[in-house]
Amino acid sequence: MRLTMILYSMIATALAGSAVIAVLTMGYDTLWPIVGAAAVGAAVALPVSWLVAREIS
Image (cartoon, rainbow, N blue to C red; front, top):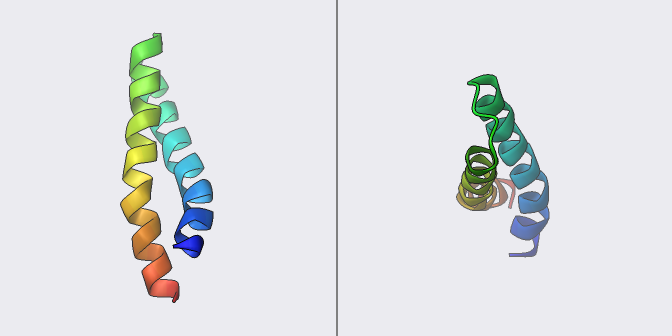
């Protein structure tokens, strides 16, 4: 669990940032699409970090 949380801090940042950049590239430059993209990126990062931690261990 500890490794998962350490990985989550890095993976969530990368996925949320990528999602925000994708939303901005598509032309959605208001608050809610940006916040939504960041939230989706953070939510998707949890299972991804768990899978990566499982493969490392």
